[in-house]
Image 1: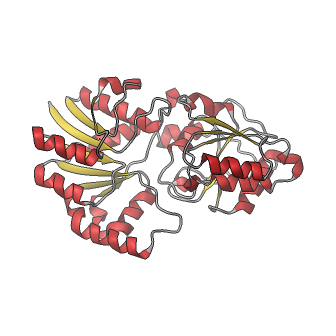
Image 2: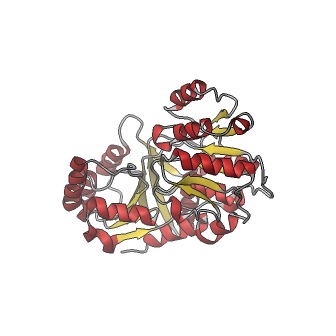
Image 3: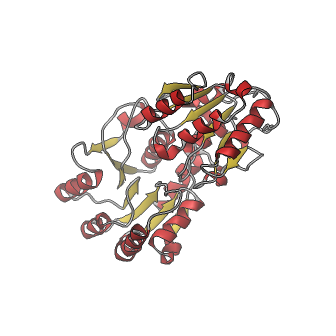
Length: 358
């Protein structure tokens, strides 16, 4: 039986069970079925879902990177592969791993980029890190074609031969499907962490610009929590839109909730490849989102949702108005795209194939 390590800077939260949780559970199961044990390194421990069946080391007082290096120096496990998720790429950490281990190192990039790119100083710094530390990473995985292009832009085009796209995926059987959506006065949800980069403040501004007859009727339900919630509440109060927005907090059963709505709104400023978009589409709920990150790799405007330029309030307002009045509508079942291209089993299988690299 072989052993690998997976290092994830990802909080395990029972109140927020998302697509990555299902991926971790299924990947662990797939590896065990093939006589591969995984040591998981997370910031914290939890026993919800299938985490109780996994070997987890938590960092708590130190970073997951330091926790991993500390354990490795003590026990010197014989890993064939070491995989990172949600860890900054091309840092001295990867050099330190290579000094200790002969394992193949695979870095999976989930990190979104700023809307207008990095400032010059940071761009130069990333190029230098690419020169110094990219050699210690055997394979780079981007969760979208956009992400792969950003890896090459950040750290150097010389990495092209060892860079690959593996799309995120969702488990269809766990997501309730909406059978029919309203053609007029549809219902809307937002499913998002509440931080400034998610652009929900733009959505509030766009609703404020709607005709009064729509503003007095439209209702947008927001699922999620985060540090920007108070600013959003203040903006809603400022524009007297308290009846338009309902905050529901984080929910562990979004897979059942999506199907209760006609459309999802995601006015984000930065994204790699959104699992909430995939989950919404899998529930047969079209998505209204921005042209950032890998969004346009999942959304074809006018077919399974609508795409607008990030921060363009006029276009967002017009899309919401047209959908609400029935002048725009999505007719197809959006679940089919997910079944064909973005399923969780396909994601698990593609990641498992990486372990065959010697």
